[in-house]
Image (cartoon, rainbow, N blue to C red; front, side):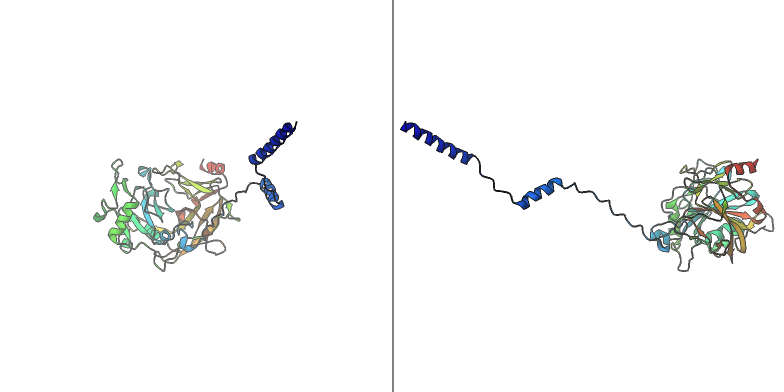
Length: 375
């Protein structure tokens, strides 16, 4: 019996010793640690904050495209633009490079035909521009309003003297052959002369022309900073300048806010890009004119102390006037209150209308009204 009690006591001691060796006693948690665990268990996942918006640069004359009023690199905004004469007969179709133009100016030539002049502020990477055609002296005056480097292939005789005062790249000048001007063998002459951005730069460098605007240059156009509607304007869903051969017209697209151009009974499309020409601003500028003594060449007067016209944008049109003191000066458009006209930012098409054809200008409130006028 005595031996039995000793055995039980020994077994109990061993069991207690074994239990103590198998598990260390955990220290008691403090109240602070317990609260930390509760907070960590219940705290929601961190929300991702939106990326801070990048502020748009303040638009100034220094970083504004002088031709469109839109933002652009300051170095490019300082440079002189390039203007180029483009044929506009059916033989010259399709034209190339027209959809890349910041400004397109159309004016009558002889026989009711028109010719185009395109202007480009950023011309370094331009694709082919075709077909490059001859100039008239009034186009050169219009080009000079932008202090542009003028590109053309020959000229009417009355432009010869005037061009001596221009920085111009003329395809008839032999030193520019295969430098600035090339021929597309798939098209018939004279509708196959073309240039591009690289060849324009080569010609400018060869002639040593100044590439930046002078200190006294004043921008031809003035722009508002934000798009606007002409509150007091008449409805202008369709507008036509009244030319008798190509019969162009513009149709307002409210989805894009642009006027899409048509001529020769079809969309006016750039053969290179496949894009239909479209403009934020359309201006009809009425000019006096005369025929030179032999009656062969048209002489459009680009100077006036009280020319008239129309400004068309965002589905509305208003009457305007314009003043240009001398042919080789810079003109200014004015609204009915005598304030300088401010254009909406974007591309502009200017159609020069002869004064005795002003009554052919058409402004229509709907496409159906326009179609009825043609029947």
